[in-house]
Amino acid sequence: MDETRTADLKRKAHAAGIQPERASRAPAPQTPGDPLAPLFRPQVEQFGISLAPRGNALVGRASNDVADARVVVYRLGSAGLVTSHRIEVKRDLLFYERSLPYLSISTLSSDSLALCPIAQPRHVLPAGNVAVFGGVERTETRRWLRAGSRQNATSVMLLPAWFDQLDPRHRTAVRALIEEPGGACDDDFAALIDRIMRGISPLFGGKLAPPDAVNRSVARAALAAVAWREERDRAERAAGTHEQAALARSAMQQVEQRMAEPVTLDGLARSLLVSRSRLCAAFKRETGESLGAYVRRVKMERARNLLGVRQLAVAQVARAVGYARVPSFTVAFERETGLSPTAWRAQLLS
Image 1 (cartoon, helix red, strand yellow):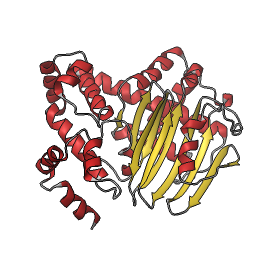
Image 2 (cartoon, helix red, strand yellow):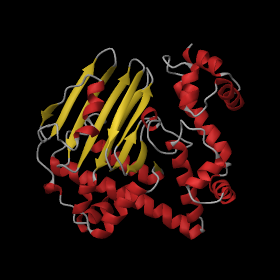
Image 3 (cartoon, helix red, strand yellow):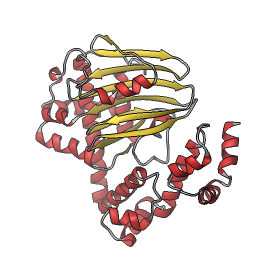
Image 4 (cartoon, one colour):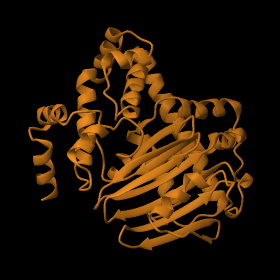
């Protein structure tokens, strides 16, 4: 299956009019006005990494009291990046990232997947989790990285200008991935994208790749993500479930984006312009879980992760998942886990 699909993606990349030679042959100078700098420079600086040119890539490493880290960055002209990093976090770190309107296609460790702005899948692998998501505005996010976590990932980040090189029909399909709720890719598509991405990363078994190889791989990864979305949508339409599935995905995205707020079912329904009864019925039919149970579950999953950060008081964890009062948070947490937040933390950190 993989060889056939890979060959098909290569043909589609050619048909889409993707021209690898359009990308710059070497990293462009880093200037204050560099449009790509927000996508990688703040991140590497937080780990004390200095990047230096090596061929057509920027590479760097650091070993200090914050982390053991290695990073490789490929620039796709001025329209995108491929970043690859292996990071073992040594102490809790409040980590911030800046983003632009872009499409991200990533293969990640479980710890890195937990930081992605998508509905977290039920089944998570130690490595090789593939996430596809986009953003339509400039944002800055802050997340805690736990000591001992492994933040391993290879990501393609494509700005809107990158899509200009595509055939119009493919351009529309790729842009749709930015505007729709992101998600975790699965099954054969995830395995394919993971293999494509690893092939251009010297940190995960691949090699430092020349520009044409990087751009071919980026095109194949983007088209694989489009094919994943199209196959998912075809299956949903054939089953007559596409509308409810899209509504469920939008609800999950809203919960993720409003994690620090007291999310209500009425509020979710208003934001999605549907009635509460319609939203709850569609979500239950699509996922097999009630929407209220889903909201509680994902908030408590985030709380469990944050309780592993020693610097955070229980009250701070409570606020981070939308509870203004610690007693209310404690009741919800005990109902979900059978332990108080304090007992959970003691067990986790012992």
